[in-house]
Image (cartoon, rainbow, N blue to C red; front, side, top):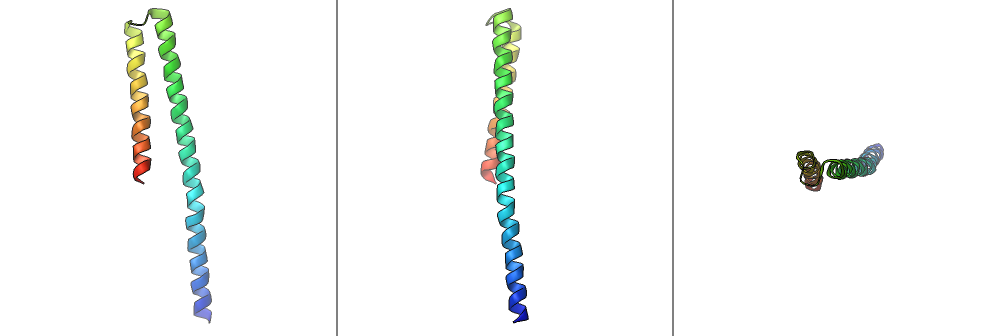
Length: 85
């Protein structure tokens, strides 16, 4: 009887550990997604500002376009990494 009780307690501990880890991962994923969205919005705003100040085909706008693509690519890579886990 004592062995069965220990087994049940061990199973409960393992279950609670696994169940508790899932919401934490989901919250971290949500936080990372929001951060990516904010970084993309910031890069888009900088691009629009550069286009307005210096022209659509200016060197500054081209640099901002390049930076926007880099941010988008990092976020896509981040999404792919999470999809594999």
